[in-house]
Length: 231
Image 1 (tube, rainbow, N blue to C red):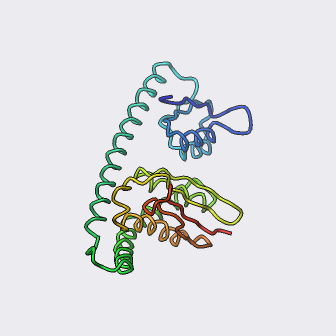
Image 2: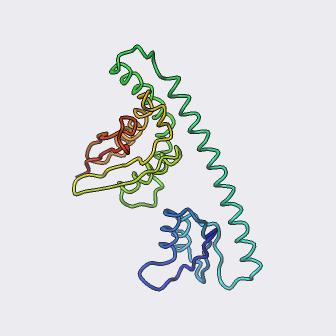
Image 3: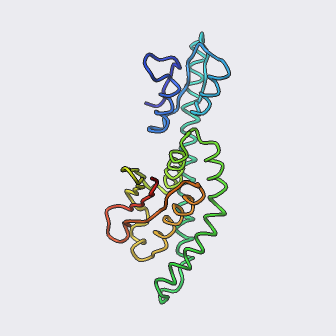
């Protein structure tokens, strides 16, 4: 659907605000709340889900129609802006990797060390402020859930499909595709940068455990796979 009209009071264990959060996280569909309640506590909970409207009953059909049209317009505009931003990010990242690459005659270990140092400085300057803000404002009470949500958002900007797996002791982050697959096999910088983002951000999170890269698409694997030992 283009839009969801959500009543806050629903039958069952989940209310409309919880349902709206699931819809937003899974499908990125704009939501307008319809409710007979307007107390401050409920408004505060509703704001976390970033709705495109909040209409208190009773309401006029003209008011509802105007809110629907505006919400759809705002959401489509936001999607266009996000797509343009993603293209700029991908282009900037691609050029940065190519320019950062040392001489092809350099030793592979030297290349890894140099690129890791370059990536570290850039990642800290460009991602850490946003990371700290995101973790501080996250709707997730569990720090691990908040961290994984941040990871998904960051790599989604690179058009990377991110999946999560877990067992009794580990959480695995899986990249199902690589936007730079044709270049990554020749240039280790692409894989090193993604790996550095995960390692540094895991350190920033202060969560217990350690990080390890397991598989890379550039090395012939079907996916990139990273492990966080959390238990």
